[in-house]
Image 1 (cartoon, rainbow, N blue to C red):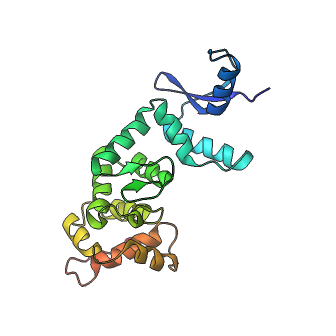
Image 2: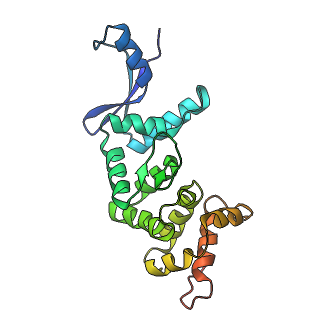
Image 3: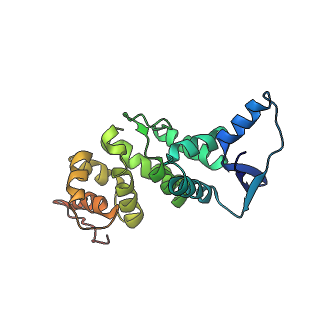
Length: 214
């Protein structure tokens, strides 16, 4: 009566990719007891592969699914990568908000956050988020799906070339709202349009100007 539950075999364990609601319904139907069901098992996937597969399958073939739902399920299941991402994020002073309720120090743009976490080592990830925290104090406007990737692209492009304190001092002078507003009319692709705005403010009236690598 139901589709097979999709499972990924990773790190010696089976992680449910898609089918948490189906599992809950079947267990409830079985008077709260576990039971045998048919599963479709994937091998050789990373946790990010699992998230992307879940979103692609559900987004194209069923309903539009928020990545927050998938990440929340993975964290509740004890997934080490999602748990570590949340732990490091909280260490900076931000909170991963799976419910999508925007607010100061709450990150709800979890697709962006996930990709940043997967591309950086823990030290870099903390440094990246600390830039945002120190600059704009955790305001909700600084934690959007435009600012998070914009700072990420700037950080990755100029890591080791820019000074953290100069970034904080100079970018404090501009609101994230202005960066997003001006970036949207840029012809640059994707997050680069916001990274270019950040670069412009970093270089404004500065002697230690960074080259345009964006």
